[in-house]
Image (cartoon, rainbow, N blue to C red; front, top):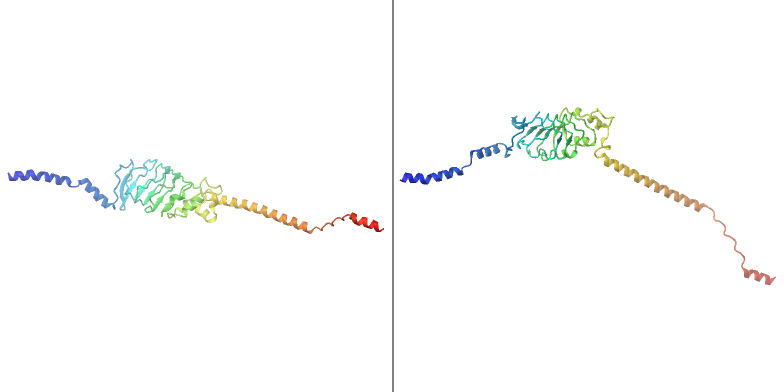
Length: 273
């Protein structure tokens, strides 16, 4: 009886204790989070043609030659290297990678990129170190897309317009070794610049006279020229006025006309006679 009573009272307590224990899946998730530095991998299924791998100890997500026409969803947020090369990406929208807080390397080469949002790399200022934009259709870049970034970038093999915007971008980034000679002016550049290396041109002439930033400078110059013209007209008028007054002062004074004799004097003279 005592044994039966023990079983009847202890079994519910044992079940309750077991139920309170964390599930095996939860424990595995916690261990995975601890192993990735506190970042919980996103649970989305990667797109077809993409896969996750460990390369040199780095979490790498590869979507090379996957036929993508837009930046895919489902990229694990613990990704450190992301390869989206050799696809059909035409643009990168604002905040496309802001859910990847530890992303260090991004490869967007060999696409058809023609537009980059000014906020394309938003949220990556503290982590992104390498960016490959080579072999695309980029003619110009928004300077604001690179504000705050400390990156090494490959910009070769694009049809650059070779304008002030590109010059400003290059002043904010470091070029990947050996890629500078591949930055060549494309069909959209001035006719005398087409086919020339941009770095050589940037050292020879001021490209910010036209293009981004140049419009403001041109407006300032035009305003100065207009103000100078008006000032010259005012000075010319003042000089003319002063010389005209000097001529007037140099002319001899005309003698005053003789006044007629007074009638009283004539009457007195007649009386005397």
